[in-house]
Length: 545
Image 1 (tube, rainbow, N blue to C red):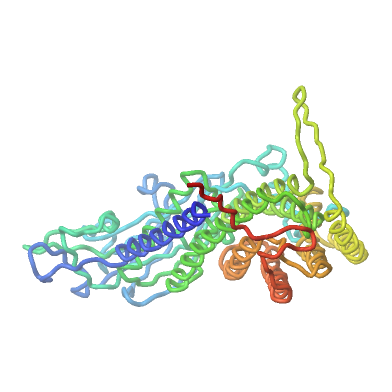
Image 2: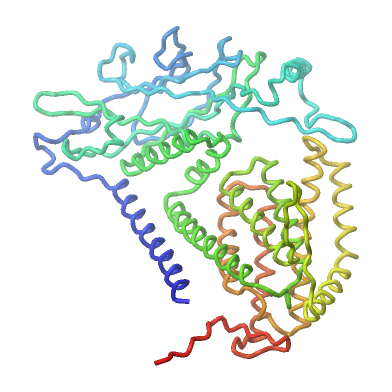
């Protein structure tokens, strides 16, 4: 018991250290030490302090260094640093871009009345307007074989058919258009200290000597986090021009440094193998919420990770030591195993974020192991082939099984017709990528819509036995905390609507379990009617002198 408590205490201690360290790192990111005194020789003063007249010009080019020519697409003549604006322009696509090529935007901030190519005190950045992604397979009606959209032109349909014949739609990346270009400039007249210049700012800072003073030009930043997968438009050979929304706003130095670190983090994840869609889920957390809500999200995610670990640990410990299925619904265990596997396959088919997919996969593996323990299955290998041996149930376990079977009998009258009817409705009126996609969607909709009914046999068994001492309450409580945390994540992380609704459905089930916990108090020191005591304190050995 001491070792178990020490391990849990160690985990919680490491968690607290992690949270404190992360808070300290975040403080170091958003806070920058200013130069004192501001007019000292070691200071870097802002060019914007002199209120110069500036102009913003945006060009397109096939290369980030403008080799091969460029085209002016927008000029903001009356440009003021602290005045935000949004403009929509139509961009003509070169032939190379239409043939699965790339296109860049060259953003210049320069002095008014002078072209950026002739201004020695201009700042510029290159932003990629295209990205490569595997196109999403079209969804069709499995009965009528009709396409998802009937408004597709014949020429575009032939282009898509040509790609299908070449095998490009299935697994070849295709150039997609980014509809948004978000620009920022630091509006603060911050004075930097040369000796304490942050490394993240250094790569964006361009300075020059003005007498004895060192002056830095405006800090221009292209917000890549605002480019979401949902806004991408596939480019084909018939696409002559596409709209581009240019958004500008001034930001603080602390926010700039925070966005730089977040963009670097997303880029690192992509280098480690995260796809564009996986990185997009993380982008959504940063761009669709404000900083205060983002800080709340961090703490919620940290506690979610802690409770996930403790729930897995206690759940595994409970089932590892469990020798009898008295009071436990075997069918509920089988259903949880089946439903978690179906949910994992569904999330995988929907290409859901790894933030949701990985925990679902781990949970499915644990549920399979629980079924092995619940049914007392032993696996023997003979000549490379597995042989399964099922254990026998005692009288108390058979009594529990009778209650379990009785509950499932009543549920089957309602559950099976509803699931079958929902599957037929989806087959007739909805569109899917394949028959496999329809099958997985139909099963997972049954799991999400009526899956909580399969949790009722355990409630029925508890009611018949008038006891809840046989349940893993430590794991249940950690899962209950995580269920309410999932309610917060349901509005933050992108996930299928049915998966989001299932988070709120589980709240009701846990509340019923808590009511039974209050209704049937547990005395762990009392030996129940099955001759079992749930006091987990080990008996001490007598000391001999």
